[in-house]
Length: 87
Image (tube, rainbow, N blue to C red; front, top):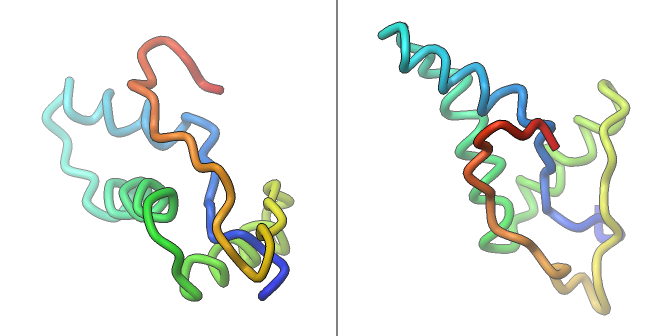
């Protein structure tokens, strides 16, 4: 895990799902929590989020980022508004 950055990327599908759920007044607490966990992975270094990134890569084929020097977090872009974009 030391070789992985803790940044967990998102495809935009979870964001879109939550936006639609809000539009239709449907609660989605688990999907919302998962999306916010991805956002928090972009703000602080965390061994737990490195494990999440590794699991997502192993089981879902999602991309991972290599850790910077001495395990330092990489350059993390903040979340976008997601308006009309699935990235």
